[in-house]
Length: 366
Image (tube, rainbow, N blue to C red; front, side, top):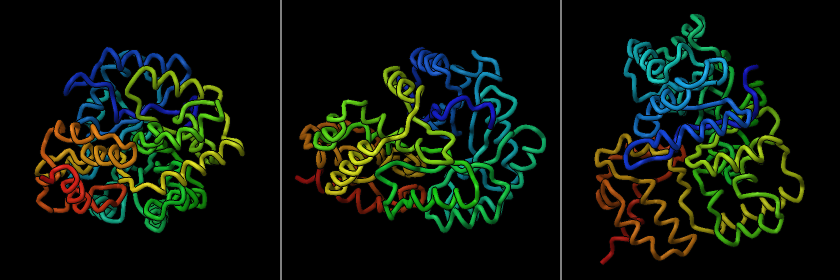
């Protein structure tokens, strides 16, 4: 972990796009700006950006910089292996896609009570530990989406886990559905460093309602993203905060306040508390647009996009939401066949089928 230069990382989940393809020219400029500012941590996964994230990383980072200049994290995702024999070929493909000989961090992806059993049956942790012994992984970790009791179970079963990637942001900190604080406390109990994902909750904490934005505006101290990321980075034991950046402007803003990092002070924490109160008074769907639900949907419904339309209408009172709803590709909310695969994949444990019915009632009523 000594090669990590600063506690802010580039998440390759939400990249600049040209239609259905990654905009490599824009992404190269973003990577260069990130590296030039002294940051060097990059995070990807096999399924990110419809399977294009790893190869985009090879195109824009690993083929352009020496291996000792960056720290690279990839993940073993459960939907890409059915048995133990599948893991090593998948791992080899990931190395090839990323254009590297080893990963600094390799995480058991999106661990929860259900898929942990799959990883145990397939000896995924044992295989990863063997790959570490071979020098192809430097550090073994997990990314985690479940309650604190499940995290306790995993870290007790596999004390060899060196780092935990958690969803941690000020809106989820005391949310009983996410248990962000409790999961963080389990990591501290077990002495595991924390990598933070979703510090801006899928963009919800950057594109604030006017009333919430005003709480930060009066401080005259930065953008909404700066308060969200600094909140996450200010906790003891947090070694990295990831941001899924998709524009050069976002890179410039983020590296600006993280180059000379300082935790939130008392006045800023009070503003955060007011913003939390405003959000909780709204009827918001807490979707982070990770798109795991879309991967397994037999109808290929763009569920996060449909939820975003309803949030836009409810929270921002944007009556153009109906227009945007009708431009969403890959089906409407009413196309749902109620199979439930989306709910099994959802890290936020959302009742997606019922929510889709609500969306359909709102936008598809005659």
